[in-house]
Length: 242
Image (cartoon, rainbow, N blue to C red; front, side, top):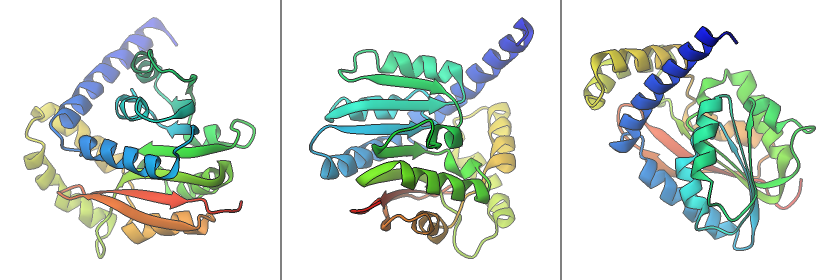
């Protein structure tokens, strides 16, 4: 990549990361609650050391904090942003367990040739960027990558029942501008362009069905963030057999 392109990418990352940090620091994505739920769900299932794969880990702020209080055997985080992975590396600097960070996409990371069996797969606010056929592929790969008794946990936007995606986006446009008043106008416009172009949320039943169709034994919602962009934390149980 030419130096000018690298600088443009770096500048865009800093701008977008600044927006993201504004939203998370004011609790607009429920990150405090999500961290509590993630720790609770993991602790209830894995009293002994477990392996975890995080998809689209970003800077891993939430995960590194949660895992500092859990008996982790290994952590693997993947993301498409080298800069985000650099931040994740810093957040895991004091981790007492092996940490692997890779610059790759979610489907590639879950392919049989690239991953061994793991106990936990975790992904927050990223699966909704995939079209439905790729979501189906991802859930199938994730199910196959989990050990017996494993768990997949996701936290994703939820399309309200009875609304098309277009109707949902039209409703959200004004409501989000008010709810995200912490953002400057140009920051909101940038975020909205991203959401309107790349967000493809499923209904709650749709998210559950993706897991069940892939062979998960159970899919349940364990937390819901309400607001103009509702988000659900779902847990998928791999079950006692593969």
